[in-house]
Length: 151
Image 1 (spheres, rainbow, N blue to C red):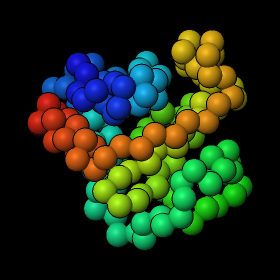
Image 2 (image 1 turned 135 degrees about the vertical axis):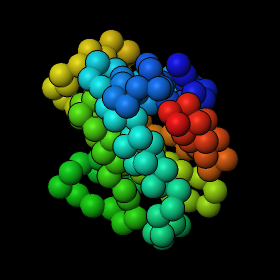
Image 3 (image 1 turned 180 degrees about the vertical axis):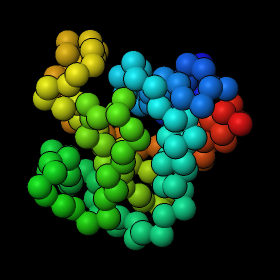
Image 4 (image 1 turned 120 degrees about the vertical axis):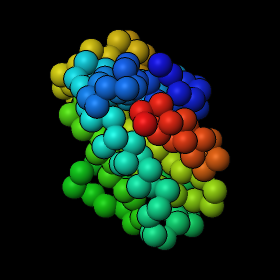
């Protein structure tokens, strides 16, 4: 089951009524997560929902000037970023989140030696870091449908 629009932001869930199931995110038509291992669906939901309630400062700089590779590197820190950890099926990715007015920014990169198969990344986007701006409205709409499907 796909909740949302894979070109923008979507959650893919194999069996919504199961406590543990395969889950992946889709952003820019790219899958984030291996969709092999099972995760607790409510924990993944809560991690994504938690972002809507964070009381952190919004980034006020120019997102075009951020070095995305610098943002992704673990040893460096850029102010106001969140490290997103959704479970083992997402361990092949480094995911960062930042906020701006009415928008959430996802930054992600497939790790150099992933365990899962990611043909889309291997063939076309190897070693590339991605950035996607998503409106709060779109993000919250997907989360509302996600929680309905797993409840």
